Length: 344
Image 1: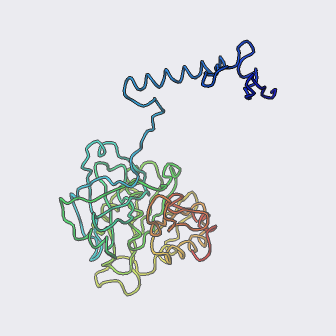
Image 2: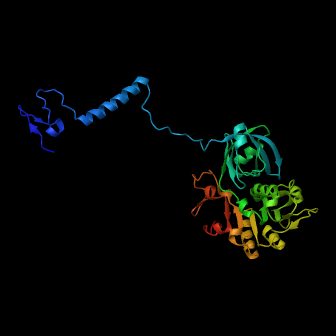
Image 3: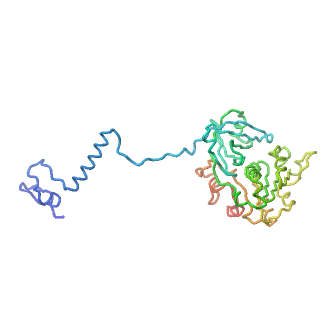
């Protein structure tokens, strides 16, 4: 661009390229400079849009942002039924207050949810019933702290919060045609109930089914009222067991630790899947027992939901190695567990 030139009064003026070669520079102070043609057209278009916007009293249009449901906002649910499993463990049946949610809500066996007592807090439980049994949600919990104590004090007809489902699930469709072995210890059987119900409700899809329900004592066995129902299903073998010293005079089940009882049964690993859950020490020895019996790591499944808090991968409490249990789990194979830190 050429340098600015001086006018008759010695003032510096804009180069001809900006003013326009066929236009004269202003001779009087205050006289407006000519505007280049392209700039004038753009300015007029912007002015027209602004005036149109003012005319209708609204801001200039912009892209609409769609707001999704608040992931922290719970659904409201009513307690419609309850049953005590043990002296400190209870099962609740819940129904959605919103009928549209009740009709459309779905989940997979093995997923979990957050259950809240308003003004007290929330805690994580597995969804204890199968999606084949719709119209309600069931959860089974042990009274161990502030929230579960408050939940235990609630009565039929009262309202609690529910958000979920979260996490992954048991790949039941991949198990079709296989033998299934369910081994639950104490409150850990709760995490297996949903997938057990699913497989029992779809009995013709699977080979023989074994259910081993174990606990420290007879009084600590959960779902005692359902075990006869499980045993009546064709092709299902039910075994119940308690730790040594936990039996009663009329006990007719096995006596021994769950991993030992499972080994005594001598289940074949051929074309089979083992699903187990219980206290961490029980899971550890179940994995060792499965290895001795010839099960491959990818044939063994468990769930680690007791390490979760927020359910969304935000708080970091369930972070183990490169896994977030609430997002990558809670269902894991023994092969996946072998890659976690040893102290886990």
